[in-house]
Image 1: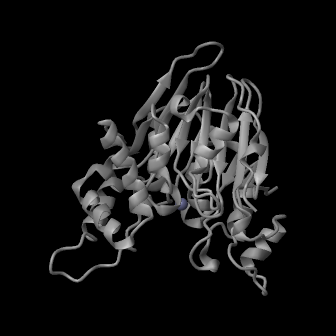
Image 2: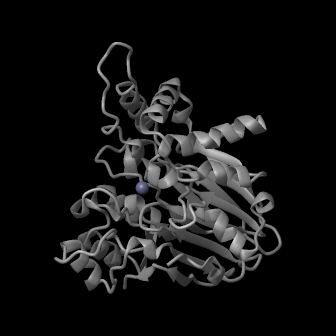
Amino acid sequence: MPFDWHQVGTPPASDEIEVTVIGPGFGECIVVHVGLGRWLIVDSCRDPETKQPVALKYLQALGVNAGECVDWVVATHWHSDHVGGIGETLAACTSARFVCATVLQKREFLKYAAQSRVVSGPGTALDFLGAFEELMHRKATPVWTTGGRVLATRAATGGQPEFRLEALSPSDAEFSLFLSNIAGQVRVKGMPHRAYVSTDPNHAAIVLSLRWGSDAVLLGADLLSHSSPDRGWLAAAGQATILLAPKASLVKIPHHGSESAHAESMWSDLMEADPVAVVTPYSRGKKEGRPPKKSDLARIVKLSSEAYLTAPTESGRARKKTSPVAVGLAQSGITMRSLSANVGLVRMRRAAGGSWESALFGRAKALN
Ligand SMILES: [Zn+2]
């Protein structure tokens, strides 16, 4: 069944903050109302039915003019589940700046992306490069960022506290590693073609901290955990300390809830106790390996006061035998439906001085 976008209702009040996480099963997009009618879009995916970018469908359904009201479109990294339709999204958000990781301006990456474009056809590279084509058309440059950059500030005004948008990653160490990974994958004339699978762009993922006064929201992208203080979540926590970022009351869980992205430091250093957590699933690849697993959901539920999943993890044809993932989801109160059942949305809104109020649409489910 196609997702009926009109059910999302009316836009938030001017002084209301909104964080809407959209995940159709494969893909992730976050739409944020930062207050005073201004919006931020982080990553992009398409409505499986109409193939249109979900952020545009959502804002249109709310009656928000994307061309006038969106200030930033951020690509946290260029994995295919985060950039579907991002070029079209940016093209519609005519007054928005495009934010991506500094490392992507390197010649090594551009060579790599250009080769992938030929090799893989429509998909990741085309969608991502579409954003750069749009910028070329506008004669605009991206906002290149790395961990520690303050991307935007707005002074306290009209009863609203000061707003800040800050990047906590990628770290310098992740930057260097990404470059050396990419360099190793660029095809050299006369050499046998190398597979494009071993590079992990999550190294260069942008984690965002959004703060309104002493309250914050953490958007974890797909940043992974690492034992080195210079990498992953330890490095992001280090940046938050330097920026004096307040602890967050709401988190978009990193990397679809996978164990590899779990970091004690994220929960202890970057989050308030018992925050609200939102997870998007990754419904591709081997079914056994798809995050979040049952154990991932159990861990997240334990660490949060409220946890939500935008769509069931399982996808495709109905299975005769019940997989461990299905059992996990069933125990979490989630029933399995075909992926064609479409989009799921978790919307959190917070009035000034109030607490987070959830609204779930489509395939989205509460976990506790
Ligand atoms: Zn992802």
